[in-house]
Length: 251
Image (cartoon, rainbow, N blue to C red; front, side, top):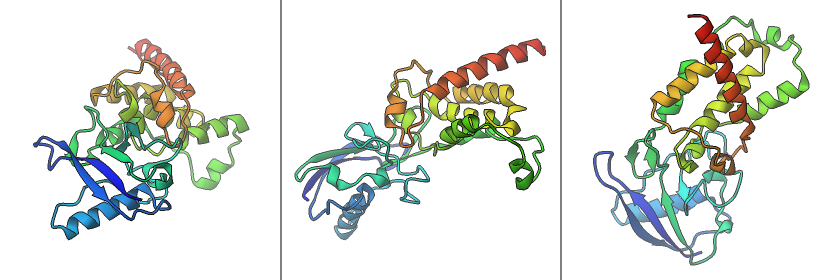
């Protein structure tokens, strides 16, 4: 395949960025999008130019590092995949492909396609854990959990924290991410002890990080590589309301 690429280049957070045009040839339809980017970088290095900086790690759809907006869509045109799982067969010979980073106030740029997503870590640090003593793994496995609750918890826990939901949301909201992290703990006995405090703490931190509010547009669910449901945002709102009333009653 022969492709025309328009890639966002930004040397640092302190400098202005711009889209730069490139052309590459000999791209296999069976290669992944990241492998195509590797081909581009090999070409740039051979020509004495600075390679395109982009995040990647596992390249198996697990880590959530491969954050790219491809032709205006977070992770690209194929649903329910990360960028590393997107294959070039989804494109046609001669296509022009525009590659940009996540764009959100809470995700400041670092270089080229790399942005700082530690704001999501801060939300987890605010309450996305179980601090009460739960015993060892065998003890936890002895606690009966209804099948429906276990399945809902596992669905929420599938979130890999890639940030595509934020990148796709017109408000740059992190509600789907936060809802998944709150819900997967709230459904389990070990997490229910702190469920309402957790919701309040994590939402407050989300707001403090500069993420926007949720207006139920649904773009987050549409681009989520793990197909996290909007239902979890409704669940988070219920947890938040209960937690707010609990906090008010303790004053």
